[in-house]
Image 1 (spheres, rainbow, N blue to C red):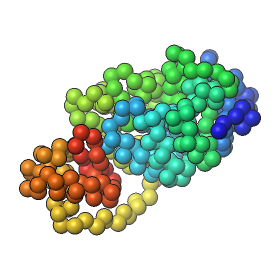
Image 2 (image 1 turned 135 degrees about the vertical axis):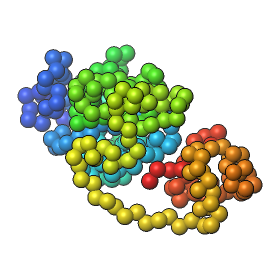
Image 3 (image 1 turned 180 degrees about the vertical axis):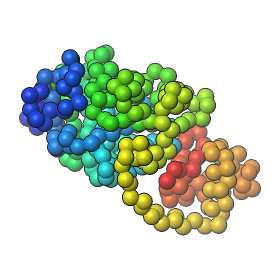
Image 4 (image 1 turned 90 degrees about the vertical axis):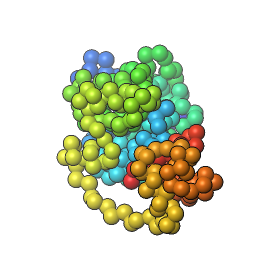
Length: 288
């Protein structure tokens, strides 16, 4: 459990203070930190997403965060959904991750406490507010402005028409930073904001290599051993890839397998990490 005694104060006059904030007239005079503050001196990249980010995008985002974390510090918020995927991915990679709170440490999200404790042990948690400061209506927008400033660019994993992730992207654009987004199917409510970013000139992103190419980061081409599939699993995966995503009954009709067998095969493929459950008996191939 976090206590006020665990935080370190970083005044604006300190060499450890985030240099990216010093030009703001409303920059916090003191930053409160738990974890490895040396990460503030490294290159950083922001990954965010709404609480309603689609499962496929969460899977992609987690892998992107994992891959990028070896070359740049993944920086994000503290919410469920896209922020959690960024945290989990970075922790599964190098462990280099920074999370920025909207309130003080006394208002830290309890639903994500176990994940944030891992971040504190391996990375860094920051707050621009004293310990007891509650989260107010304007807290998130201020946090999103500071968050966008920390990174060399921002990737949005999921954003509805109105979401904090989209506000972060707008601040990143205003600060002349590159903005990346995961593409969504037309009409997807969870991805309206992402598609709007792409229409507005954002960078379409499907893997860490899309980000690395723009930030001049050299990612090692890791040889991923092929997952061993049975003949039936391979056939079903090919069918699903042809659909992009589909309901069990549609997959059954196209593959020729009965629905009960499709369900069993999809479960096996999900365990092997090559298929993602979208809810409502819908599935999609996982992006590796």
